Image (cartoon, rainbow, N blue to C red):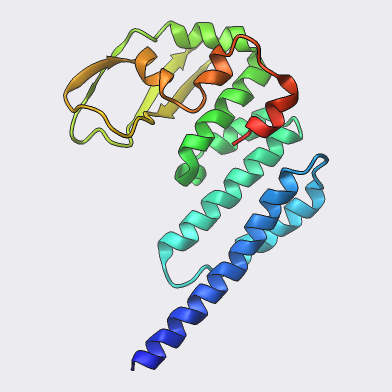
Length: 195
């Protein structure tokens, strides 16, 4: 019996690792100096059809990562509206911290850095109370003049429950803060900043 279970687990792991390789190859191609978008699309299409084992979470995680790579590809192809639409969907929930950075980069490309900064700063002093059920909480800011609600995750790992903090304090701990407030961004490094 132990032998059968061991063989099944080994086969499942082997299948999972092999199929995840398509996702990893697509990601590597996107990081190239000149990405081959047709090849990336083919790899991601094949990856969507693959089996990721018997665990539903493994499949959901893989599909989320595939959708996130598709959003990255749209960004690199300058298809910003489509990128924002995909990254805002529930299909990319597993990579939400990286998705927050990609959202900011996309909003900057569409509306400009100063516009996005000003709209976020309008709501920066709003207080948020962290409670025990708060972990993984989305925080949403209405960017009214561009008709968009920017939702992001509180990314601080250790915090005091029942403590009030401002959105500005929360923003400072995010992985996208530097994209908005770096006084001299290096546009050549923009591609490497894409999560």
